[in-house]
Image (cartoon, rainbow, N blue to C red; front, side):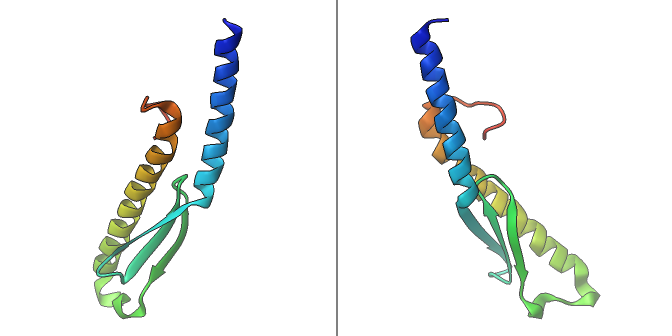
Length: 101
């Protein structure tokens, strides 16, 4: 392997590691039901928090609350994946690397 290619690969690896670490510090928030359920997730798709407004907590209708939570979590994951793709895409020049996006 050419020394320049090896050096470039090492530099890319270091930049990717730094970008992954930065993504862990970035968060997005998504909600559902007009904001009665909110989910905060970081750029590494780790859920940081879930908040539920007391007015939607109803033992008689748990399925409604479950749907709101599911919707908010899925939206938060989607937004987090977009954030990661945007951050890492500039490093990989648009090349899709399995496991990163």
